[in-house]
Length: 253
Image 1 (cartoon, rainbow, N blue to C red):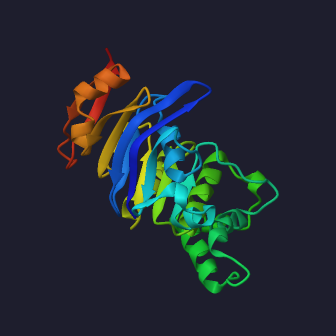
Image 2: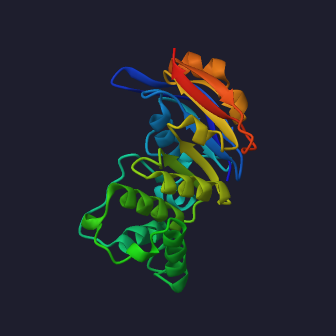
Image 3: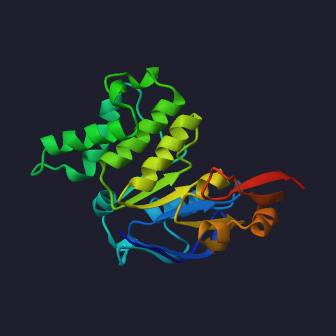
């Protein structure tokens, strides 16, 4: 599913958080959003999800203005995992993931075996099928994060928005989730802190001060000059004989 941001700006209480951001994510593409803290990544993510309305500009989802779609229509097309996602505590792990099917249910379309299958597959994808009956209060921060991702996957969206999904995860599950994202046949926008993780995406958008300062293939958008300018650190490419692609090495200037 294609999503397009056209000249997006957003301000709150007189403070400009995003300024004239335009980009397009093609169907099936994975776009990484990177930038320093406060650069506008989460704000852009919320605008793309329809959770906030832009002060200026528009978001188009599959060529349709997001503002013209109902909340149910948006929820059937788009799933978001936010940094501070939370869930009521008196609930099991499986029940959390089942919430992802809510946009598809109605009096005329009750829960079915198809919904159960989507939930099973989502739990398996994030390696949480063995935790299905566990109470939410007994889970670690990383386990809860994986369940929030599973809930989004169970929704079966055309567009998946992930705001720093690897927070709270150990390195095994960071790599597992990112590998899962790469293999999904869904348009994905993912905000990341780790620039080397962003190199595995199709394209990278670099934000700074609420503005889009670079957009393109990873090695182009994250060239050492841009990294130094935006993040205030020195960077250089490292090529390992055992790795097909180079990665970035950093040190303080």
